Image (cartoon, rainbow, N blue to C red; front, side, top):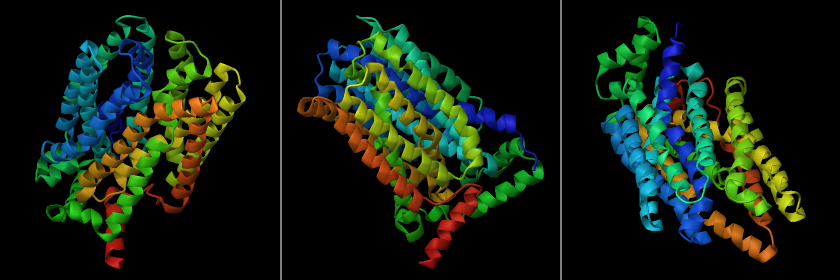
Length: 452
């Protein structure tokens, strides 16, 4: 089978806008937070709100994203998300209080929510079966590139006064470049077939495959979309689909509440708790963590291709638990400040090699074509609700443990327990989807429905 790998890879890189926005925003607020705390005199709860207000927007984003992706298409939805994020960046940079800052953060969260539902779906719908895992993982690579660009921006502007405003404004430039890139990529052929634009879908698929294979692919998509006019949110509660929905929700909630995102989101603050001095020194000291996850993301590509999904998931979550245990012991024993980097590297590396990319890969492929958009929207709502709760209460819970026990070790014991339970869930409940076409996966769940 002849495949234009260069063309599909180029599309995947541009379409990974959602991952980039999420990664950039995740770290830019981490770098700005110590300065915001001083600028706006923020309590622990207010710090949590300054961070989690964007995540609250991410919760609502998938609801709008469902409407936009179904009616506007995947491509236009991604472009709109980028525009929202640019407006958010400018608004945050000129904000003069916590509430207007949080409003613009919320607006940016809406953009991220739109992008994070449309980007993985779009990439999965264009990817050949044997390359789907690798190409969807481009979204994770883009996420990590966004993280590292944000670290550089944070360090360059980590000075008192208006430095944090320049951090927030710096998001405009890469986002604008990504929006321009989206102008030149095609729409999802599966969405075009769903809308009856068969010739347009065939032209796009012909650029990926040869003519014969493209025609066969169109016919497979048409066959799998025959039930599209009957699909509704009630379809998600049918026996086979409901099982897939529950598994996807629990997997993506695990991706948010495992604690590693908090290591990334609050890395400079965590290092300050460990004894590293404030400002640029804490940001610079966290750079090895962010650089390391970039290396691990590159290593995840051959791992995803070589190993099955479930084995990699279980190994990833298990090592994340080990990282949290070491972090807890580190705080309890009062080891040297920079030693906190060691468990951060274990947790972040394990997360990036397994759960981070595979969560989105499995989400993008576990549902039948005709219900994928609705199912992904529902899952993303739970995902961002879990992320909101974790980001909101992490600083409060950390401060409570510091006040009560003299150190924040208890937080990491909680995260270690969550990861242990998550590893068991991945082993016993997550199905293996590697090597199956999206249509074959859909048939698997439909057969489950008929057998109930």
